[in-house]
Structures are given as structure tokens and as C-alpha cells.
Amino acid sequence: MADDDEQLSIYDEVEIEDMTFDEALQTYHYPCPCGDKFEIALCDLQDGADIAVCPSCSLMIRVIFEVEDLPGGGGKGVEGGKAVAVSA
Image 1 (cartoon, helix red, strand yellow):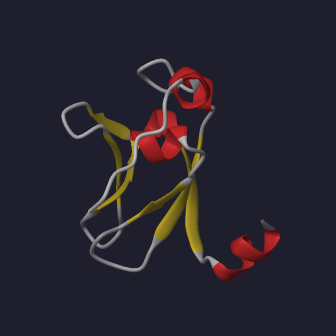
Image 2: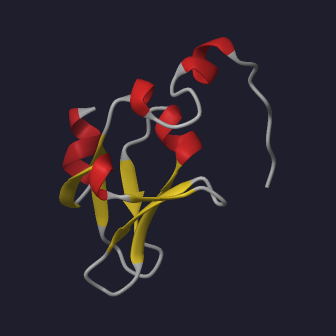
Image 3: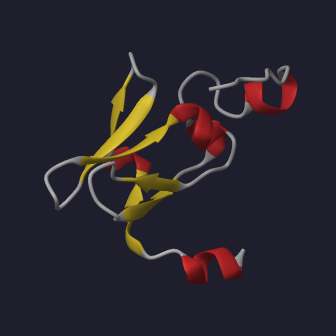
């Protein structure tokens, strides 16, 4: 994982409590200096992802959180639930 960290240019580290949760989109947001918002989906956080990206610029932030503290049961659905294939 250290190799991944070296390749990523992280703008900042943000506590999940400082982010805004959009219940309709199931996405966390945080203001980006470019004027847009960093975003990361709840399901990505539950899967262990911790990098939120801004769709308008190249900046990324690391989200500091505990999986079990996430809404919707946290990690309970990740280990105990069924995997569902999704195609885009």
C-alpha cells in the first residue's frame, strides 16, 4: 500500500465527521478549493476505499473513518451480505 500512497498526490486528510452526507445519492461531499466538491460513495467507503476525488480538478483527499461507524449498518453488510455484480 505504500507504493499506492507514493503514486497518489493527496491534498489533505479529512475526518468523515467534517463531510456532508447526501442521503439521496448515498455520497459524502467536502468542499474543494476549485469551487466544486470532493465526493466518495458510501458503498466505496464500506468496501474500504478512503480516497475522495473532485470531479472538476485533479485533487484528492484521504477520508479518515471507521467502517463500523458508517450509516446503514456500517461494515455489517459488507462481510455478511451477498456480493452483487454491477455493470456500467
